[in-house]
Every structure is written in structure tokens, then in C-alpha cells.
Image (cartoon, rainbow, N blue to C red):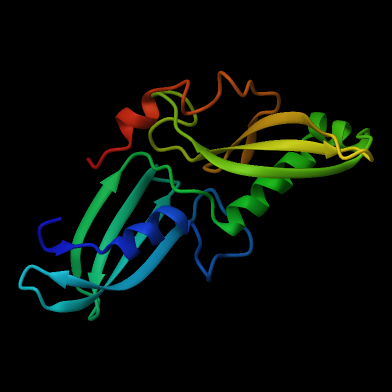
Length: 194
């Protein structure tokens, strides 16, 4: 970015937040959603400090991520479009993922038959190759469905891939070794500005 040098605080916020305070209660496969928005004071090329807001918006219907930096007056300083992103899910996306998993017929039956307390956690972004639902334009996360037994032993019931573009369970019984970013180099190759 030639116009600005982002501070370490903004970059840390971008990489760790995945949170936005004003998310819609229900996700829609056709509505854009803000994945994060961070405002910070940054140094411009002339050395003067300015207020800048960095925003990442996912547009499911277009299958793209729009990364925008605006100044304090709302002027666009930079705008870039990506086909993939590894930004974590928003709270609304996590809620939608958990609801999709809990209502999936196969998984719901396993949860009902569990011998202990059931939790659904994770939410790691999954990026796959072109042509896969988690490929360019998609937005997928992986989650674990766990049961904790009375003796404290924690057992995985299922490893699940959720398609957040369509808001559905994509793989109800995924393989943690085969269905991860480490198993698919697409995450590294496609997460670039276009």
C-alpha cells in the first residue's frame, strides 16, 4: 500500500478480530456481510498521522471479498478485491454454523445419542481449489462436534465443514487430515489480491 503504512496494531486487529459489532441477526446467502472493520491512526506518506478505517466485506452473491481503507472523511484510499480469505467467522457466522450443524439430520441424531455434554467449536476458515464449494468465491469453516463425558474425557463426534456462502453443512463427516488448509495448497496460492 503506497498511500499508507498500516501500523502493527491495525494489522494485529485485522488478523485477530473477525468481529463486527453490528452484524445482522440472521445471515443471508445473498446479503453482504462485514467481516471486520478496524479504525486506527496511521502514518501517511508525508509522515502526518491520519485516521484510517480498514474494512473487509464478503459478498456471497458475487463470491468476493472487498478490502477497503478509508480516511477519516470517508475517502477511499485503497480498495482491493480478493477471491478468498482466511479471516475467521463473525459471531453471526458462528451462530449460523452451529445452527446448521445442530439441525443437520445425521448430526442431530448423533447429538441426541451423545453420552455427555455436547459442544460445537472451532471455526477455522477452509480454502480449497477452484471448483470446490470452499474454493475461490466461497467461505467455509471447519468445526468440531465434541462430547465431554462424566470422567472429563473429550471425544470428537464429528468434524464438519460448513459452507457459509450457502449457509449449509457441506460435509457432515469430514476427515480432519484431508479436509484442512494444510492438506490443500489452494489456501496459500489463492489468498492473494487480484
